[in-house]
Image 1 (cartoon, chains in turn yellow, cyan):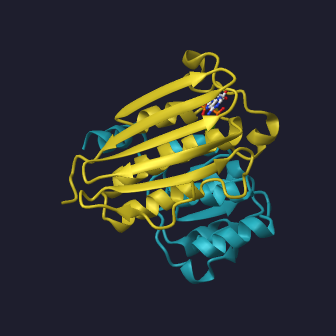
Image 2 (tube, chains in turn blue, green):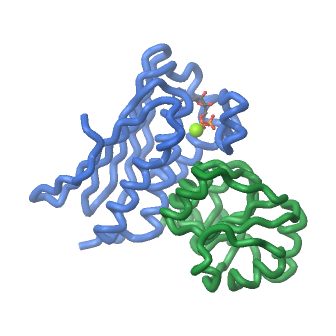
Amino acid sequence: MKNGTNPEADRDQKICLSFNVEGGNFLSAGEASIRLKHTLQHIGYPASLIRRVAVAAYEAEMNIIIHADSGVLKAEVTPEAVTIWAEDKGPGIEDIGLAMQEGYSTAPNYIREMGFGAGMGLPNIKRCADIFEIETHVGIGTKIRIVIFNKQKTN
Amino acid sequence: MVLTEVIRLLSAEVICGHDKINLQVESACAGDLLSDLLTFSHNKTLLLTGLTNPQVIRTAEIIDLAAIIFVRGKRPNGETLQLAQEKQIPLLVTQLPLYECSGILYSAGLREDTSKETREEAKES
Ligand SMILES: Nc1ncnc2c1ncn2[C@@H]1O[C@H](COP(=O)(O)OP(=O)(O)O)[C@@H](O)[C@H]1O
Ligand SMILES: [Mg+2]
């Protein structure tokens, strides 16, 4: 899958974006989420909503980079909602209950020195999301689905 | 508060975004934990931090931070600077430590934006 440059808009005003995210690649970390954010700005989504989408996507993108080997960040944007999928191949999460706790992190020190690994990522995503689903298999990978509704519809 | 006032109060040096020193900042936040900052920052917010890696600039772009001040004389590397130039985010450097910077700006009337309530409202609306 190619990193999406041209969002494809179909008749139903649906925009689909897809970005490859490489584990350990901190140089371009955040680019996918920023592209998603720009897309929403471009189509005139409300600022408060864009912020929630951007934060949730960024945390999900960073989790792939920090914790997994490789993954994809996908988004589907309609006038009603933004849906984000973050799917990775990686170690998976052993104890989701623990991972969802604020402050719980297995990130190594060098990650913390970069300012990540505060253990706030998943809680942040949940806080920003209207729907948050996580599916994980140890040794295989993790899938997250985030839905954020646009209550003040753009058109 | 206008950025020039921040620059004066903290004896800061502008290292990126010289043309943006007249912008208005309405709140400030401080810290070295990016995820924490993602939870309580708002528009037109100034970030005070000791982190100088490119991730700080990306975070700034995600939540539309107005400007970044590196404390204790820390200087970002070329990568960070280049990214900030691309994204047109003003960067300042002050020799003062974080605690002192926060105290000075707070006393001068620059406060952290209302946190939780605003967040929840944003979700409700
Ligand atoms: N995509 C993922 N793959 C494997 N483990 C993950 C993933 N996302 C989160 N985790 C686990 O859940 C913990 C908490 O995640 P998070 O709240 O984002 O905090 P942080 O990323 O700062 O550690 C992580 O430290 C890690 O152990
Ligand atoms: Mg995380």
